[in-house]
Length: 264
Image (cartoon, rainbow, N blue to C red; front, side, top):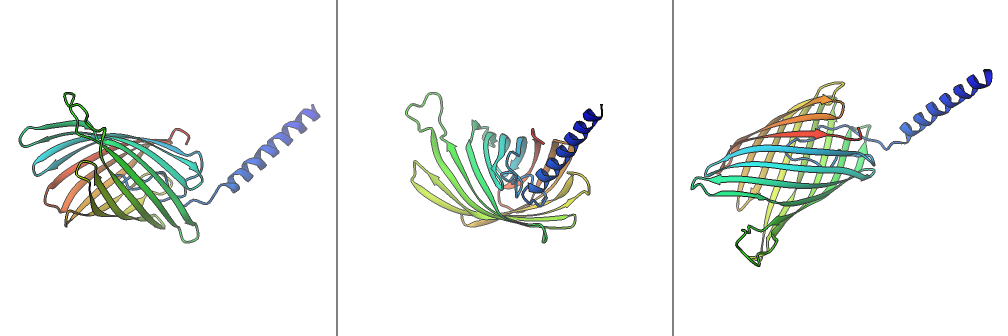
């Protein structure tokens, strides 16, 4: 019996030591609040094996049309600090002339690498690339229509810093939009600056995204109040409302995002 107790004690001690060693060997990571409208490709400083499913629905009002959008998204960390993402967005739109557009918009593929994680200063820096292949506006009775009508190429830079419970983040970069049929390239610019309050000892937070875009010779500024509520240890819901500060077409929108981390 003493031998059995000795073996059990030794096994427990070894298991505890291994757990401590594994925990210490995990790469550094600073917890930042992730914007809910402009989603990142995993957390900054993501650790290998982390994954997340997102399903979303949104509705938007514009000057001459209304839109319903939905998407399904999967993101995972293929290696420490390296996040990958695939997203399929779907659009249901109707303009004032009652013309309907119902289609899968395309396929989005993204990658993001956090090249700096500074725990002392609670700062993370990352670079990434997002590529969206846009499906052509084909109809069942149209033959020889190309599968893809164009693409959007978006390299970006991210800087994030925490001040105790306040999390700040900047996402910025150009967008190159190419149309295969017309063979022309449009260059746009995006800046997303967010500030969130992170509720202590939880995954809940609330804040504001400030979306600023320069496209076709004009600026657009949309403010997006938002909240993330944790419903379980690995399941959360995000709610976002868009309010125009400066825009010629945009009037209002909202977005609901369901977030599930299967390996939490």
